[in-house]
Length: 221
Image 1: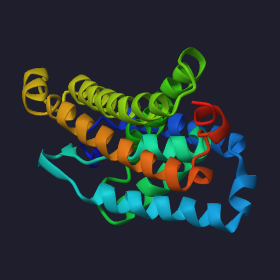
Image 2: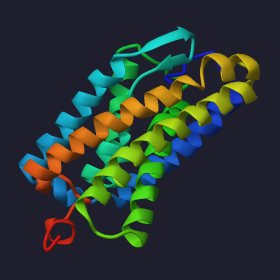
Image 3: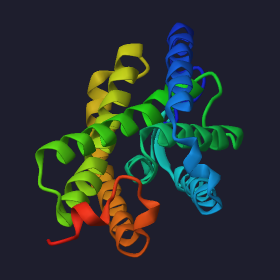
């Protein structure tokens, strides 16, 4: 994740610019901006962006482009919904890029992999669970927060591995031995962090979590 410049072909980067700009434009159009008119919600949104900038800056790696950090995409998605989450994580990516932690030419590739993809996975799993599983507190926490975060991290790692392999940046053998397996460990960490944060939020500040409803998940349970 956080691909530097010069790692991928320029044609890939331009194509990624088109896709990421389209995703951002759609998200800006569809986002429930009225929610952020409330000062508490606005401060919460901006605070989440700052917190994730700090989280993304804590990373480790072995070679250019082969680094690891937690995402926080599932928490952002469940708190604000997919559209505001995509916009917010775009702000996070902008912040870490300005700080020099990723490349400008690869900005959109990073945006698709670390923003749009994990948000889409997290929200898709939430919608699936919401339509197929009982409305229960523990279902919300373990499926949407815990399992959703693990899937988002694992599939993001798989996508990043595929991009690097197809681009010829590293060999498939090297990536499958020294890069992809670590996303399983990162998936556990992402799941644990997301599960704990969402548990605290829905217990003490349920009004901060857009996808959680006291009546549906707690009443008469």
